[in-house]
Image (cartoon, rainbow, N blue to C red; front, side, top):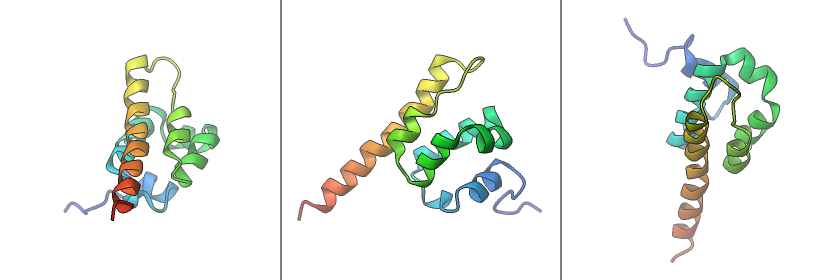
Length: 102
């Protein structure tokens, strides 16, 4: 029987790392899945302190700026992840703007 959350898979690991993972924008979650798939949780935990601090602070621009992986990850793949995280910045600005237009 399948459970709704695979506690031992990538999603479970990300939820343990980032307690509010479920509340992150969907594009941020996609970017995190891409990163953990390529890096593994140990690498993400141990060697990405600036990125992790930015994600925990929901500073998507700093996370985007810290998301570049080294070879063999292609420039296109890195751009995809950075673009996903930067879209979260744009989306949050739109949400704030919409909230102020009363």
